[in-house]
Length: 268
Image (cartoon, rainbow, N blue to C red; front, side, top):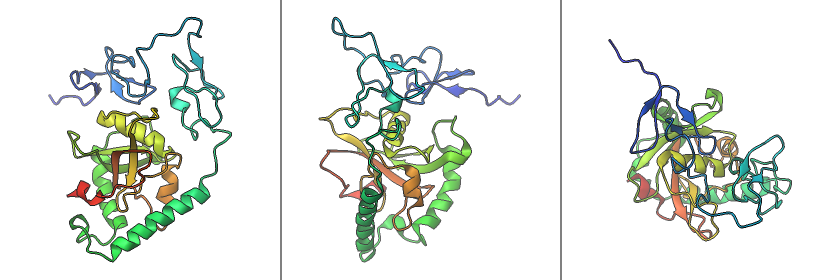
């Protein structure tokens, strides 16, 4: 008798137990068994500090300021722009509808123009081996999209109509070269990075001021996409878009680094 394809495997590497009623972490969106359902037991990358003791006289937890959210955190997660406290899920400006969120259109236009200029400059040079034979990035992405939909990892709770698929090339030195993933097209780039880090088991220090941060980079120009932009905005961009089914690169960059200079080396 054929084995029923039900349940999901726990994403903890040393466990991988199949659970017929798996738990979805509300912080990192990972899939876990009963034993590893808590954030502490699966070393949730969304948890910023798990071992700090609360100082005498400090509150037991910090409530999220987002309207309708009842989540509380053991440590304060303060937005540096509006200076309000939020839970991990709503810490990004776009996720808590920050009152001081600048409309990114002018900034985005400047970023996209810079990306377009780099792509146009590259067009005058010899194309890399990975692009030979492809009529266009859009056409190649459409072909790849069908394959990605069969193998991509992501939040299974996302509606099919809101999913966008990428072949995510991982930071150099990772155990895997790349991994197919899907995200919600309405997510900010920052939230997509958090999800990708959890799916690939990568260290994510994006909440630390002094650390190198994970950035999502344009596969042609190497430009690091601004964290507060949405994926939808880049998918809809005409001159230098991201393509549903296309490639993106995930890499650790310093705050003063806005481009990957050796972008082609990720695809060799």
